[in-house]
Image: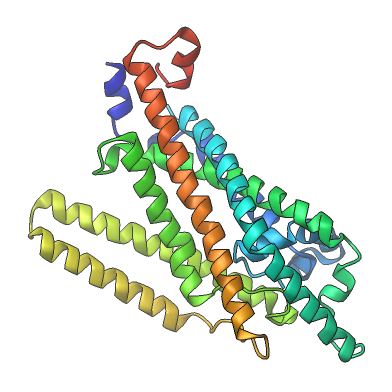
Amino acid sequence: MERDSLERRISLGEMPLWSWLLSLLLLGMLFVLLSASGELLVPLLGQAAGLADYMHEFAHDGRHLLSVPCH
Amino acid sequence: MITPYLRRGMAAGLLAGLLAGLFAFFTGEPLLDQAIALEESAVHSHEEGAARSHEDDGEVFSRATQKVGLFFATGLSGVFIGGLFGLVYAYFRSRMAAGSEWTRSVSLAAVIFAGTVLIPFLKYPANPPAVGDPATIGTRTAAYLALVGFSLLAILAAWHASRYLRERCVVSTSVRQVVVGLGLIIAVSVLFVGLPAAADPGEFPAGLLWSFRLSSLGTQTVLWASLGAIFGLLGERAEARKMYGAPAANLAESGSP
């Protein structure tokens, strides 16, 4: 019985709302961590984009080695 | 029903990310240092040309701090990727042909690795600092993300087509695999031809470039292989516990109602 409930197929609609929101959040954080930089975000955020460069610089080596376009 | 996979994914991802960081530290960091040295000597010889890449960057964080940042970046992206992997796994788990937690986890990781790393890498391989014009970062990032998204979609479509053909038993296994394989090759070829060309490395030494790319591909292989393996092992362990009567504390983890 317990097995059945786990073996049962979950349809996309049955995936709870929080799992969709969390997926978006995780993708967003992955973007901030690996891709966001001042240069990239200036057209969107203007001056505030500079803040992203702290993340850019700190995660710099990881970005290059995870083959994300860096600069 | 989903939470245990999410938690398992994040734990496996953290470990996998740190392992990938370790691999990157030993194979990639010496190459990054060489590339940055090249870049800086180029900037100095140009006096103050338009090259405003690492010259001002160096002042934000020292190289030593950036090497700590490497583990931060790989570990944390491991957590995020692992969380996403857990959610995707919860959805695909009952739909996969593979029979055990281990096989399912390893094959799902292999498939997502192919879609998000391997196929994009063939067109847009990793570049060390000094390769790529900072002015084009926007278009390059967009093209890269588009390729990651589309190759994932191509793989998902191939998987759906394969499952459809198998369940309907319309064609034999060999025909099915040839048809699906051809479709995937065509889709990937269209993507490779259609998307803008990769950044030109220009004068950058070819040997160093190749070593760097190899190290980057290795880092991501370590990340995905360990994610699939650790997630699979955790899954097997949870199954075993459930089978032999789990203590109360573990019931919640195995997601019983």
